Image (cartoon, rainbow, N blue to C red; front, side):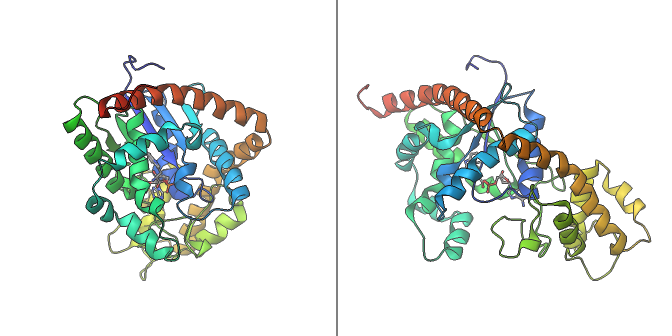
Length: 336
Ligand code: TYM
């Protein structure tokens, strides 16, 4: 894993704030696996980001290991990719401080995720929440990342990371690689919507648990949530902008089965939601079954998980420290 490798570098992260959803899987993690051979991949469990909203300590610790286990259950191979926990690499917090001094208050104020989260957690609008995108920029820039695979909800954060990198490079040329976002195509997982309100993205922080599917949900819960999924007034199974509920289900069914939209529309022509919704549920149950079983197995083997995140942090620290040393030198800090 050296910087002389010909492979382009990928970095991405997932927050251990609660359980992973079908949105996290189809929008991001599923693609992480597909990228492992063609790129040098670094995947992080971003626990520093998670504490921007209040977390119960024991739950956070468990959720952090659960995300790591789910990464592996979704196909990430610790021999091929670097898998680590963000707080194990101090350079993330250190670079974030320097980048704070290259981020404008106005640009950070425009982040829609900050506005949404501060409305949702009005009693805890902390500075960390405001600084979230700067820490995310540090995550990405530390590894001289070429591409960042994420869902479209993260595009504004990728843009600010690019702006911060460019601003730093203008003063200190040649410091950072300017990263690019890598998004699934529209209709291929870029934005999976809530089953309860298909105009909103599927989110683990949705108050209505029928809106999201968790990767570790039991088959009967998955079936129940799909059978209850909100659909549209006419009962045709076709992809259409004015049918967000059915279109979301078609997208999920297509990703779970590998069928094209045309094939799905033909399969359900003349049939109603009564047949379609359980079919989507069953396809998702089958897609998630091996992931759930593998996660449960991995979580029983804490020693192995520890071995994976320790080795991941060792590799990540090595790469991150190189960039941090360069940044410290460029801004004028005395060598320690
Ligand atoms: P998080 O944990 O909120 O989301 C993890 C990934 O899942 C994607 N995602 C979705 N994609 C499609 N449809 C949905 N309904 C859906 N919900 C979530 C997100 O786009 C994301 O890719 N800020 C990041 C974590 C992060 C990060 C980074 C990512 C911290 N540092 C550096 C990349 C690089 C986040 O929101 O995670």
